[in-house]
Image 1 (cartoon, rainbow, N blue to C red):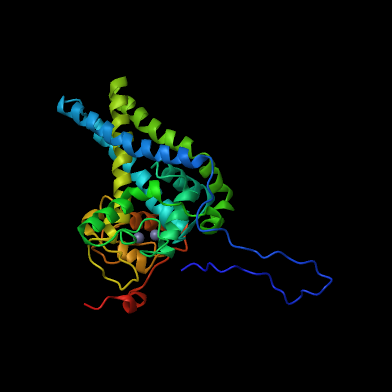
Image 2 (cartoon, rainbow, N blue to C red):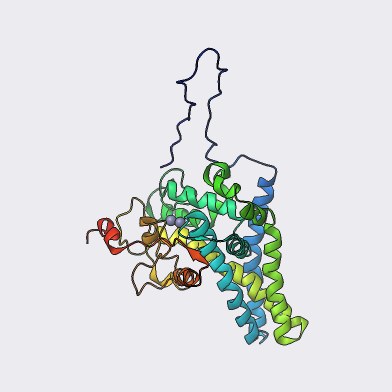
Length: 329
Ligand SMILES: [Zn+2]
Ligand SMILES: [Zn+2]
């Protein structure tokens, strides 16, 4: 839990010749309201609402035999790196510091995460750190278990809120309070400021790949549809499912103080993030899959980065450290 008490200056040296020092109050929990709030909510609506409409258009094109093999290849080529930008970059590196890397690697991972269109890195990290600080209690920005009543109706309302409703209703976590380290990092501040540029690059790449693979403008446009809109939508809902389903369904290997769960069928698409009970038990662990059979592509990438010198100080949780937290069967 985060200490919300007011921090007062040291008063031991407060003799009459020392001018009074004002009390230092930590930044509030929620991000202060700004002129951009309404614009952000509208942008959320567009980013979440437009891709499903475009998916319908894509389905219609497929029915008319307009889906090309190149579109599928481009979608996969774009899904994996932008997904890793979220899982390896935003989550395991920037939020939890489960390994260290150089400024270029850090910047590229943050730019790839930005291209996933889940918000700029500082905002994403602040909200996620607050989720861990208040997990499934009052203050958690996206718990399916807080404030939604009992019965099936409360369960459905909670799941909808945790999945995407919170993006429209919850106050966002204060960046000064939850991500001051990132605000002090010039590389991350640069990527944060230029977020829209990386979103546009993430759309230009599939268009360019489609154009190059087919040699036709229509090939570029259908690749943009599948490698852009559909890829963004799929990755959004996989990430959202970690917040909703992985706090609701699945097994709990570890006795954590929240409702986090491991959901094996979501592990491949989420690049390893669905071992969410493991993650809540050991948030700084670079690997979320803690057994050899728990597929965790992000952990494999971090291992490869460590082997090539791109990542150092990788946090590994031994079986010995895991043992005391195992749930009693
Ligand atoms: Zn969680
Ligand atoms: Zn986390």
